[in-house]
Length: 110
Image 1 (cartoon, one colour):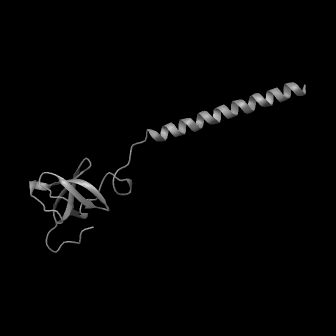
Image 2 (tube, helix red, strand yellow):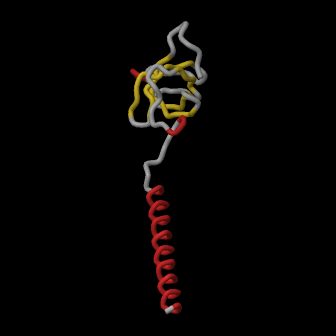
Image 3 (cartoon, one colour):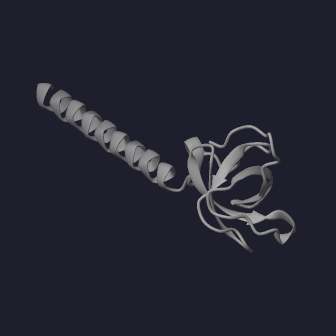
């Protein structure tokens, strides 16, 4: 009877170990398929009204620093914005920020 009991305990432990490994693999695989995060603090949006600084010339598109991250940006109305000029976020097009030059006397850039 003790040999049968030991075999039964061994079988139960083996089954539980296999189920535990399967559960861990599923959790790891599930995390790989999560939506990637972008931008400042893992966000895909920068709030409208956020101040920033043009890092490159923005004619049709360029790069701005806003909310502590560099973002692709497009000038509203295709108004050229010089590198170093302060800008304000006025909208989004996917992960591209829509910006305009900061009005005179506006808040400081980020």
